[in-house]
Image 1 (cartoon, rainbow, N blue to C red):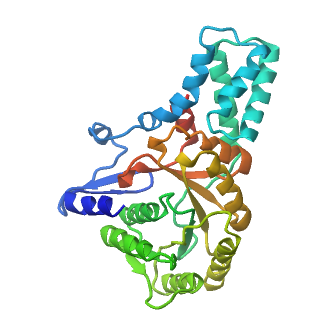
Image 2 (image 1 turned 90 degrees about the horizontal axis):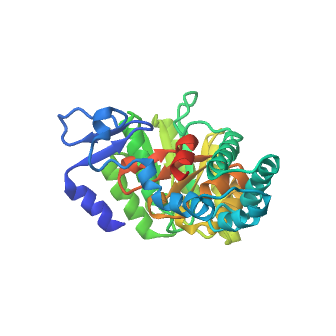
Image 3 (image 1 turned 180 degrees about the vertical axis):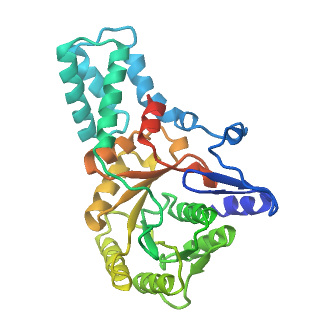
Length: 344
């Protein structure tokens, strides 16, 4: 992590992203270019979502296609399909749901591999379409918006906060990062590096070890100083540590006292590589904190990106963003249609 930040600083080339538009600035006098333009897509280092999700596609549709290519698929093959889907990290409840729906279609008419593809595509679209989700952005009806970011150690929480801050600065927002992880000294140092790089202010008061106190004071400062966005970091913890989960609940309550509507988003950062464990984390964090959105990191290096479907199906939590690389612009808004096309 520290090496990554150092290399970014030495490169002399910064990349900052708006939500939906990513800007690359080589020097102060150069006009930034939007990622959405045809010119930016010609960049050699531009990574399409389809390319980024190659491992997930191979682990999901690749297995299905390999198993059933050239066959006429009837109800007799549903057990084999179920076995394949269980290895794709969709989660058991999601697999049961998909098998039930596909089986109903197969009973009406035997399928080719193309028919199975279309059936799975339809069902995945239905899963994501049943979840209402607002765009991850500062609330226009709020003077100050507060995001609380939670997750286990190693999921990429600190890096995600830095990228979120950079993206919002690119949109002209005034951002404050609150160093709410008072348990780990390295977290504070990492956040300071990101804050410097993103040119945002960090709230890290000396001598205060109560994370709830840090969160309360940070929200108060955000409101009084006219910050558009306050991003509150929290200590990484296992979802099984009940006392630490209680501390998160306290932090959330305290923020509400500083600003009655805060936090406006409670974002859970999950490492896609953790597969089924990510589903368990989502269940526990959501139960404790009423998570409003998930950010899935490290999707580009994982064959377990199907967990996004499981989170949506089993917990009805919207996927807000996905990380498909180390660059700031590689933290992208989640588009379910694009995601489904990329894994099928």
